Image (cartoon, rainbow, N blue to C red):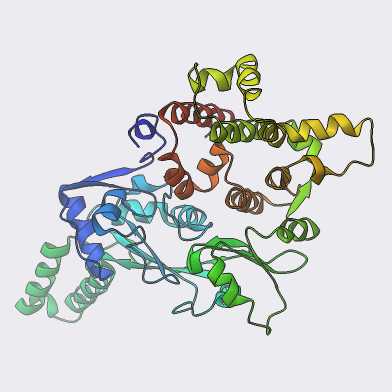
Length: 416
């Protein structure tokens, strides 16, 4: 991961905590029933998740209370706009953006001497079966202040009201209570510490629950796409729900996604995209064992790429270049079938999100495609970082460097 860190592609968008802020973070963990960290300095992302603590606790989702209850911690206003590195749902970052948009000023005030623990509550105590995900309709974000600062504000205001009543301004006990509150908590008058819950509507989304599930709700038919085969087998035994169920590797899934306007077939258009070119090169790297030139040089050179491609077995060459071969021969013979020339994985690769999708739906569709065919390293990094980091460790050092260069170049094009 060192190369990724140096390129700003791992651990970026983090806020470093130490001293009093680290202490405050541990106090927030205690509110969640999580043991404190022994680390003196560590970093957190936009939701308050720390990669160092995840390693220490051997749990990537240590902030959550089960799969159904997602929590976040806000220690610093600097978390606004930062990345969410280990989301439980595809909408988690959007939720944090909504929180800062609604209460940015209040968060800056509160975090001067306190912190917030957020609960993303969907009114479900626990997920018992995958179909519970269909009830995921609204998210209510509730706020708890560290050390109950909001309640102490109410107590202080009650003391002030008591002080003003009749002749209580000369009562030493009232004086003592008011001074004690001021010394312990400061002057809490005029501070907005009562944050009303925020409600957000949830449409289609991805969740890590049940081994990973895509919940596609606002299409022609509702669809659940499972990443875990065992969970899929459990789900298909249920006949009470009128819903389409698939495992991500099912061949029938692509046709269903096209029929429901989640994906489209524009194979000629897809073939002319940089994404398709990256996928060809990724498959090439998987097949190529030894080269006389550095991989990065081969992948960046049209001539060297062709040279080494022709050294591979003919069946591998056909698998990598089958799409171009099909369209070349289709000019002569209009009766050719795509599947006769193009590997089934490449057929899936050629799909892309339907143009009618909204931005968040399009991102979800790209994430699903990255799960189905994890062959484009740039899209994996954008839409499925957890899988990207897992696969990255198995790549050669030379290919890692090329991938990093590609991600940085495409991030710049996208304005990321």
